[in-house]
Amino acid sequence: METTTDAEALLGEGPVLHLRGPILLGPEEELAEAWVAGGRIHHERPDLPAGAEVLEVDGFVTPGLADLHCHIGIGDGGGGTNLAEARAQAITDRDTGVLLIRDAGSIIDTRALQDHAPGAPGHRLPRLIRCGRHLARTRRYLRGYAHELEPDRLGEAVRIEAERSDGWVKLVGDWIDRAAGDLAPTWSGGDFAAAAEAAHAAGARITTHTFDEETLPLVLDAGFDCLEHATGLTDETIARAAAARVPVVTTLVNVDHFSEYAAQGERKFPAYAAHMRRLREGRFARTRSALEAGVPLLAGTDAGGVLGHGIIHDELDELARAGLDGTQILTAASWAPRQFLGVPGLEDGAPADLLVTAADPRRDHRVLRELRAVVLRGELLRPGR
Ligand SMILES: [Zn+2]
Image 1 (cartoon, rainbow, N blue to C red):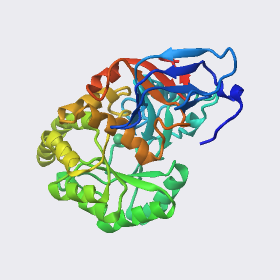
Image 2 (image 1 turned 90 degrees about the vertical axis):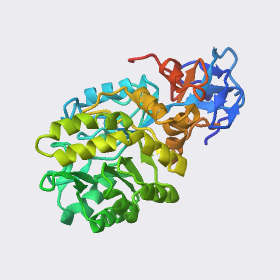
Image 3 (image 1 turned 45 degrees about the horizontal axis):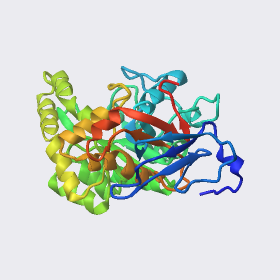
Image 4 (image 1 turned 180 degrees about the vertical axis):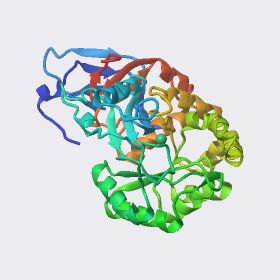
């Protein structure tokens, strides 16, 4: 972390904040108080210029929430948005306390939203880590979302997305097989292995959309770095994911909608419909088993496309229904994803991306719905702006 001896440099865009805590550094680690100056967190009171305005802020301080599966740039109904609409989506998420987004696939190029300078498209937007565009097998995903391709082009496509993205590639691993009338992997074990190898060779990590049971052993064999949805987890694949420390991004709000997807497919694909209902019914027990086995859980909303933005708190409520306590929920939605993505939390000198609540979110996650303050890059934000 850079340090400064120039007191003037500690004055950023807004007033210096004195956070009167407690400051929740991690599940079991806290600090009595901290300061925000020059856009950064300070564990010790910094030397301030004479006459510096200091705003006292009372409350529990946590790192900003993270949404590990979000789609900035996909509109309601599935088409690509323009940049202004994508910006509005990110602001909607930000105002719920999401200050870190891993975009799990976008139709449009959202790189401009990473320019946070005043007047730039990304001013006051959450930190965004992009996966590029989804890669899917031809006609084996929602129409219009992904680059659709055949196995002979997979390695090259992975390399291109690895280059274009922020170190993540997203591959759609399974979807309905209309001939079989049920979910099935969209690639062979060899294809998954080649995709993972291409991503890793390019210095990127690779994740996969997976609903069914058959895909998980294939992607775990292939060395995938993360699992999206993962509704098809079994005792065996839970044990494997735990041993390999491969996290699962939960998306339980989306999984709750599986009954609707089942109803839509019922007439033509009854086996698929029954399968989707089974996966939905098992969602809480499976999430709990994964947690108990030591699989890292990361909160993701799947906002954008089918689901609207601004739904992180609904996802946290679903995690509570699955049996996670407040500390486990905050771990899945804040501390663990930051660590997984290599983004700091509330360490001394870290960018000040934090939330203030009146009560302890470790005791009841629902206090995060009523944020007392949202601070992004040291700036105290006002909703919608
Ligand atoms: Zn998604």
